[in-house]
Amino acid sequence: MRDSDLDRVLSKEEEILPSSGFAASVMEAVRREASTPPPIPFPWKRALPGLCVAGLTLVALLTASFLLVIHGAPAQRIPRHWLAALDSAAAISQSLGAAWIVLALALSFASVKLATHLASTSLPRYERT
View 1 (cartoon, helix red, strand yellow):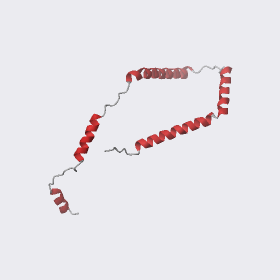
View 2 (cartoon, one colour):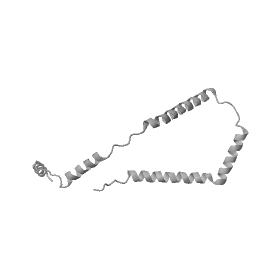
View 3 (cartoon, rainbow, N blue to C red):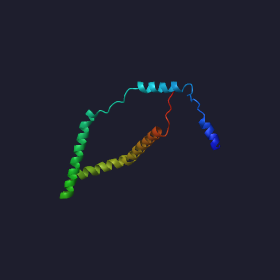
View 4 (cartoon, rainbow, N blue to C red):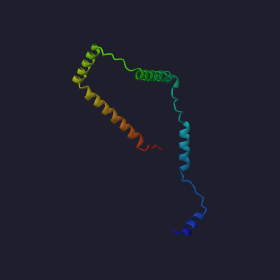
């Protein structure tokens, strides 16, 4: 296409009209969006106490860790009954195959999360008209 042909095509002032159902479909979409209820607000009044407790716990943990690093850890031995309890818990979990159960649960969780992520991001959402 030459410049003169392009100038001729662009110099014509033709009225551009939308297709027959375009305006109606746009107005229907506007009405549908206007009729949807507003999103549910996050319940900050209920979540705030838990967030405050979590923040205070984090501050206390960081303070205790910092003081432990500065002053050094006390050289105390672990009580024997704790060691016996840990040993019996390890033996029970080994006899039940807890490692395989944890592995199966982790793989199941990962596959569900991956499938949910892929389904929500890669597939286009089509609306029925």
